[in-house]
Figure (cartoon, one colour):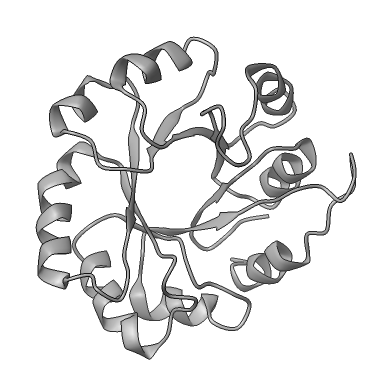
Length: 206
């Protein structure tokens, strides 16, 4: 199956999610490498899950680890990219051996000019910016223009507010490089409800 845009699915912590997403044409699967974080995946589980999927890029996620700590983790996790969920010094980004997805949180108090200045500063050092939000529950007319403006200048993955009703419209109006979704827990080993992801994938069929 081919999808009409790049898709990253984060919070992969079970084989059911990984195989389903890979089969649906997802380009990137994200795994939490940081012990103590939600959806943390041990090196052993990561090796087992990643051994069953092919044709996808494996993304390691971390929140606040130093470059040295990240490099040590990479000895145990053979990932293709890193997703950093916080700001790093540019020199630190350039010291990392893999392409970077930088997660950027926005909220109702975000000043557009300040955000654009930050994106401009970092964009030559990262592969994508994942734009996420805990404040905004949807993508609608109030933020279409703002998201379209930054997507026209920078490689943006939309990471919030997408559902079966608005995904196609958001892609048509905003033109991001791609989108970021989330996996989740299995109901029990080997059993998973994929309804929410499937409804969005249906909007992305090429």
